[in-house]
Image: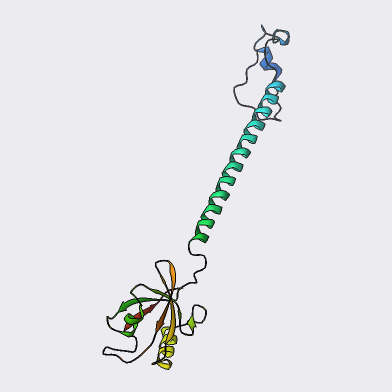
Length: 176
């Protein structure tokens, strides 16, 4: 009987020298009837490798489908979280009691998306807001903020009051 001690890749030719056969003179080719031929082992190996390949393709396909489904769910969840709210450009970090800002209902942590004619699209610096405030002294301004995830419209009239400035609040720009 001829025994192979190393694994054989499909398509590899296995050759046996005549000296190897002579070293076992008691067993000739006629006595090897009960053994599996090398060609049959190669075919079994090919079939097994095809099964492994098919299983790997199925595994990766399922993983790809799962990943696509997870991404779609995450995107849908992100869309459900205030899909119509514009990006704020500033945040209120202080409001003095009794000030025009306080009287209008402006609160700390309100995120500003519109302040008079200044909005998300044309805001560049806080000077834009200061200019609008100076030109609107005594005239009501429309201010739109995001508070608690909801859009809220306020009417703010810049004017002289007992405190500093025309508004009585502090506004910080947000990083974009």
